[in-house]
Image 1: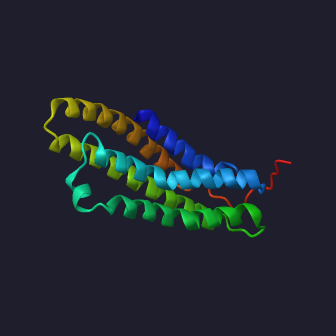
Image 2: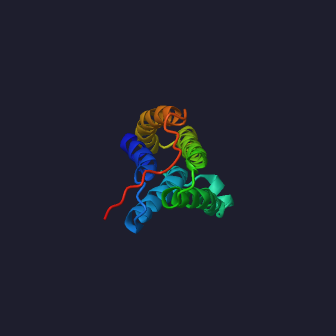
Image 3: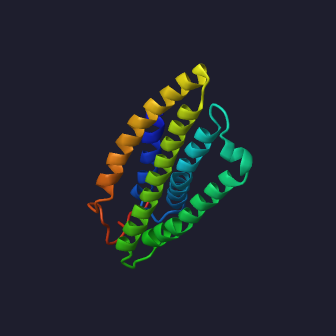
Length: 171
């Protein structure tokens, strides 16, 4: 789980590292942004069903869909601002930086909820095998979450504030 959290954080922060106005780079950025907005939800969903589904899912079968829709709603302005930041000559870097921070807050919130869900599963599960599996998940999640949380707090401090996208081209 440690490496999963770190890789997901790296994917999300790499999304702004490709400020090329070419179509393949824009598509890659959008894939990174979309995965960054949904990956925390996937972790929450995983922790809700592993090792056995929590009662919340049996009562509210629509709950995971609400989470995925919320992640998609976070993605839409993120993607639009990133596209305009790369393709236009206007100085929207500070707006993009703000939206980028909102995306990282979303990532932090979903990682926190995923970690909390894993702890809830551990506390409410009485099966020894399941508790041992969850113990490993929680240990990996703790180290992965703490490493990404420190990276997010440093990243969100505003030290990377952009004023405009670099004008690079792949061709």
